[in-house]
Length: 449
Image: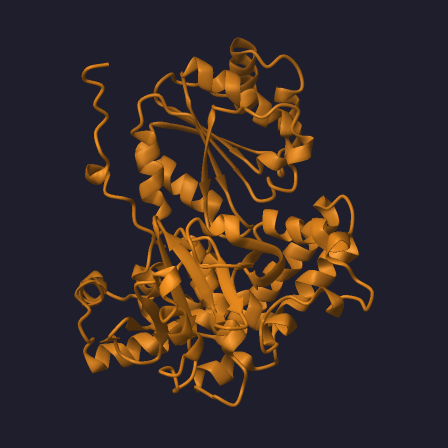
């Protein structure tokens, strides 16, 4: 299955003085598979060490870490010669061998081989690394499959996606037949999610029950990780994870720490929330006091929503048969939290940091994202009344904040009304961060100094 990250891997390979590439993200998102595919097509020599399935490999990094020693021990362990300038060394599940992270510096300094590291719980294992290879690693964050990748996996033609992108760019209405089919496919994406193994099950069988079974297996693996890798607060982390669906079903979606325990305080659970975030399992979205650049400085860290990194997994944890209610467009269920989650997941993979706004004189805006020097308010509507958005209207009418335009993702066709753009749900695949125009930056002129 096609993954966009392959293009970033190719771009990394083409760098002249490249660092080691650290590919990180939650478990089961396809890191190992895509690295192997990349290596197969781009290197004449590929060697792989998995520290989870080959624990004896840790001995390679238990002694001296100078390049000559590492080269000899690696070659001996792998039982093959390493060809300079043509070999990719892949160190998988590197969180199991902290010393290997330290050794990266010496392998990169020599420059004989390309190095890729991969791991799923690096954020929660950082305290075990003796010395980080600062300046010798390039980090690449990987996420579950986004909606465009899901479309391609299900046989949607590139020509169709190009047509949709053209409609998005030119703000043109989409042909009704295509619009309806894309809405339906997006509903399936919500319940299947972006875990490659789960998507593969769906593509091969179109059987939702098999999809749910695969999702529950992944959730069991996540729970096992909590028991294996968390140093403290295992029960707290587990409790927070299991509470995410019910918190998102609440009217304002904000995570209420008191729901964990009547006398719970955020400071007592802070490390547990961070564990889930660092493991890539949960995506926090913080409230901002004002929608002004930079949003980071306006975050209220004590007020947040907590989304699951994959909405398919969320559906499998939620109300029984919620999948079939979504597919049948049953508006009797409260699917607002699930809809928000799928957009949180895709906004994050599209390069945005997750934040929202909730003020008494405005109301609540589902997402407030920053694109370079602009603040963009985003509302998510699951029902038919998507043109009712008083909070968004209030925000746009606040002249002091100078918000140019608001966006509403909805079931309707693409439409522009004054300062509000209505986008169909599936258009989230084109809603991405943009780089600034470097030509607009004034050139440094030191004439006369």
